Image (tube, rainbow over all chains, first blue to last red; front, side, top):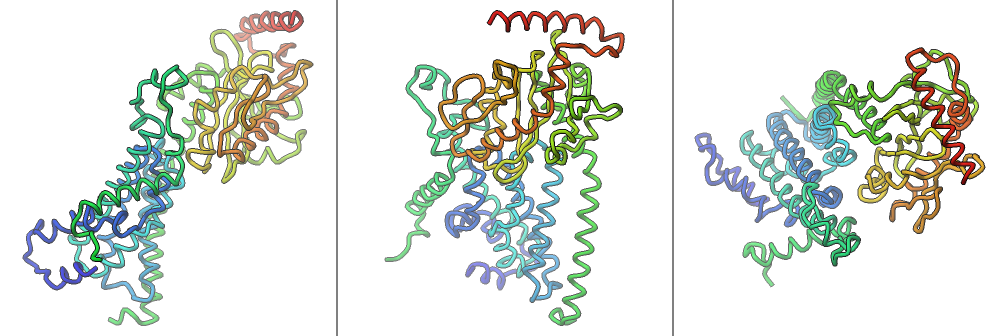
Length: 227
Length: 261
């Protein structure tokens, strides 16, 4: 939050498209200010759709679209939005974009839309999106808001993909639906290996996210809190 | 302009709602044909999957026309003339009493054998579940089945649409030794015999939903199918007569087999 207000003061019209500050908008949410592991937002969907890699990737792309477009729209109309109904306006923008994504998936990526089914609707309730609208797009210009949306969606997607790779590989022995652990290793075929069924259950998503937070906090100086 | 006045807030909201409604209905209308096409093709695909014909969604129309030789609606053991299964809304029909129900039936032919494909519909934990089951000529043996769902829990109830679950139905019996309707039940652990399959751990309510769905949906067909598999109707088109003879021979063999058992 503090960096954003500083940014706002320093904005100049002649700033290059990918100035250092703008690049930071993209890269910050990937690590230092990751929406899932640092801000701990959007946990609900991280838990729900990370059983397999493919839906996680499609979810990330959908969120990327909704956040990029949503941030731009909110930023465009930010001076027109009446303060008292701004949350409702944001919700309407998110909901419309999500319905659009859902309709397009149903028409052109039918199998994926079947797999994501209820979770597409969950994008609406993804607090990262509302959070960025309120905290960033309401106070910043179009290009910055776009970068911020893309950056945060990417930060969200990276964690989603990490968790889903972990869960799919150990839970079903596959990645992107392709069998990676040889069939002959399995106990049912006389081998020694068995998939860890617990990986498929929701608690393992939280545990995976927690492990990622642990590793990240141990390695990122900025995130180590003062005693 | 005061963006915080009451009248501005009202006007802004009204304009926003109109714009959003227009855009969304435009998108929905534009994409509707493509979506409906997907759903239709998926239905064909699932009907074919129940008789072990696996085709891509693009090829499903052609394959459907090749394998499915007859589409009927059955009410109270009789064929309803002039009604197509596509007109039947199964979700409504399963709530009616058995003797008023319109039961859609697809008759498939593969490698010279006849299969009866029956659409199923029931309720899972969160929403509707549905599927297709194919019966062999003897009406008792399940040749194949597949299921799908609207919103069952992924990893748990949603597993009913995986091959690991529905392939268990292959070869199971829906009739008991005396030819009475018995259905196939999904049970919790240790399924044995021809009338049981293993359920999904953590998906008990969905599993029970499958059990109820089979029992409820199949009941309306048994009388008609038994009649059909032994006595051939006389008013068949000429081009089907040859196949009927084959079917008759097969059903005779089957009754012999049953007797010797």
